[in-house]
Image: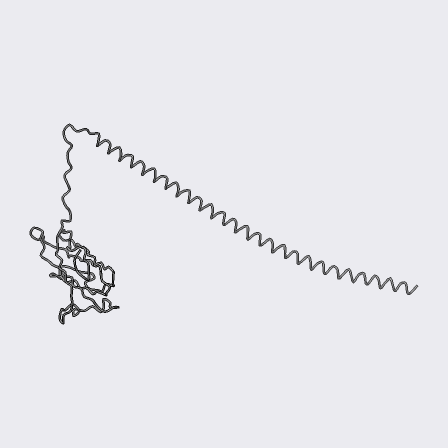
Length: 239
């Protein structure tokens, strides 16, 4: 972590896993410790070799910005894997509300007593494939009990893992069966509801037809009774 007043930089060295003919990347984190808007810009002594994203921007108060540095594929390895490339991080206070589009090179000029913080970072190459450690041979006369114990622990761990996996598979199968049963019951319920509604509609239709038939029958009987009454009265008058 750097001792800058505006930004904290982590790490303070850029370490690239080095492998011939392959790109390599590393990242650094910039933390704005102040209550101001802080603009930053990243420069390097070898711009064709590195790509920085973002290479400039504005960090809000008490905020963090991650910067990724990518090194292009190299054809040759440097002597003793030592790199002389350097990076320079500049930071300066900017007006509130500033954005990355407002960042210009003139912001980082020290003319007129402007305070510009600067921090230099060096580049370190790290072998991409470090040599694997040579396994230690057991000392003569030592008991193989420890190795047997480790093998037994590994076997027990594998058995426990298999048992847990089987249990999870069984639970998944039960859950699938339950879901299928619920879906089937829901379909049957919907079918019963539809049949019930259809039956009610048919009963209501029959009820209306019966009511109309009953009303029509009553009117006919009334006419018949009136006719018979008239005939009877006429017969009595003639007598």
